[in-house]
Image (cartoon, rainbow, N blue to C red):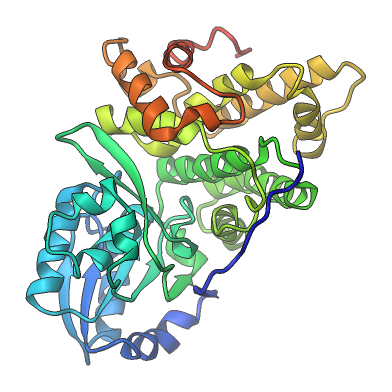
Length: 396
């Protein structure tokens, strides 16, 4: 199938390196006003010294704070942020953290101009296109989601067991990417973030449209993530490895490499159900599901793509295409396992199948899995969850 028509536009100013924050943050923020909402997570930025550094740079601003934004960001944080920006007529948001903090901040930026419950903006993202959005900037501290250069957010509602994507009208105005800020990221989050990047790439790589130029870009970024994740785990202060992971995360999901594609995503909607019901680490869930999904999509129609994947990403060779394809899937599994994260659902505390049917039904409906690289019905998703209960299909 031919490459589809597409338009690429991204107005985020990306500032990569160690010197931009101290030199330019205050000036960048001042363009948008005097009242700043500072958003962050559990407080790790205080332990690292980043909080004090940022507050010093904000000494001439009126600063309000929203902290405690959790992984798989919850709608309650967005509601709290909406209250702050409305009550104090805040001008601009500065998000300091990883994808969860930035994702929540994006929706808060829309919620200032919405008088209803911000969960409406998640259920019906089109509402966000008809209202204003506050400007927001971010200082990234975790390489994973690519949210620093796109319009998307994923927000969870524990009361309804929903984890949904929503898109706003604007990308961040400025994103600061300093690899040294990721030195203190734990091995668990470094591994999970790397798997998340890799999964973003596979979701766009396995597609029915003919996008050779973007395939080549994806393969290059995949090789970068595969090589640099173990280096960052072994030496957390490796600037080169951390920098490569950071820019890989951005490039994987800033709308470039998925341009012209035909199909929607599959593994992410399927994993979102796991996170919604069990609040597991998103990247780890993706690492469990991705090799099993690859087994599901491997057939006569996808064999050539898997051979390409085997040769160009994993540097595998051989005359038997089917053996190459299976070897590439095994290599993917082996890489995930090498990052020292669980590779089965029981490994993340999911011990039974009680919610599989409900999760599968929701994944198909919300994720529009009929438009996936290989369409999935609810029974297929259940089978994918079941296959993820053991490692029987892989060589350990």
